[in-house]
Picture 1 (cartoon, helix red, strand yellow):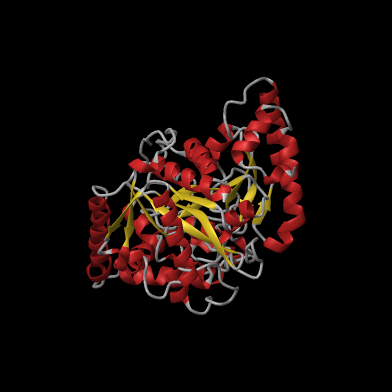
Picture 2 (picture 1 turned 90 degrees about the vertical axis):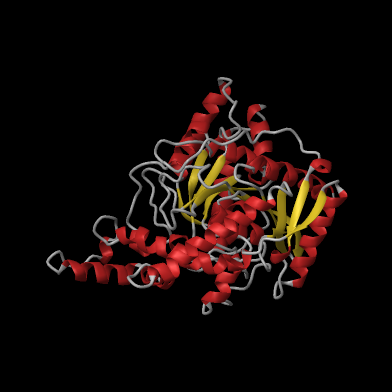
Length: 479
């Protein structure tokens, strides 16, 4: 048995039963990282010393009979936009390459309190801007299912680390699909929780009204365990909410109505992907679920709305990275230079092309004479998208759609065409705009490349997603 291959639930069982130690489990993951990460490039920072110290501390607690937390002694990796005190936190950007976190993010603190072992920080598209992890300033991450293909993004490193069994679970962030889309492309489970259910304190912001932290895991059960540990109200984040109990008993699908929105099966999507997702929906129906055709009439505007609102928030959030207040001493000009010149040259050198593109788009959308025409209208349509979802919950309990319109693509295929890259998130963006939970889980393969099924539910409806997902997953595993 390779310990690093274990699920979170099985690892907890083995640790609590003293079949192996946390140090054994942690060393297995560290060995796997050493053996494979030169090829996959999932990690930016590996904290071997800190991880082993945390593992030994967990073993002491287990020896003393304190193994109540399912995360105790279990190795985790964090996206490099989430602060871990003392470790570098670059958000995949050169402008922060010398920045070390001064404090823990709330989710980091909760992981530590649960006894999880933090292995290190994973690669990502710069400031979470991308769908392939090719926009990282440091190196691309490769898909462990086939290294010739991208892992998705922007949390590609976190998805790849779980898919490659380099860690037992990981955390990423999702602004328009950045957890679910790489989960789909790498063949793992990825959850975007309800907006506000997980604290964003200590997450380097991209788009503050859309960003959510969530888990990557090997099973739906594991995702549920992690969500339970990291969710909840936080005084350090005024947008957080109390979260309902996600530990509900098994769901009988005969009592579940699953909606299939027609707008999510569109011309141009990969035919094999559509076939596998429709087969997954038929499997849910065979398990007793009632399938209901529904419509989300404003869903077709989601991509356009997102690419007005998100860049607008990006232009505001990234204004703080000027080479003076945060790291990037390599990009500072002489202190005797005019301040405007320091800012201009630092930001020109420190930001990558995609970050610059979105900053400029956002600044334009917020500029005098254009704010009402672009930003104001986008906010109006965002409200209509949310209203579509609010209406559909009176008819169904959750929705089932494709996660991505295609499987992973080869490196370089879409780099020169930003629009084709943006379209990779066409089925995931609306959940962020509406603030609802959504989860991707594997539902098949096309030529060895995974396909993901997306489940979406009403705000606070994670328990329904877990219940439907676990039922589907159990049947798929038997097959």
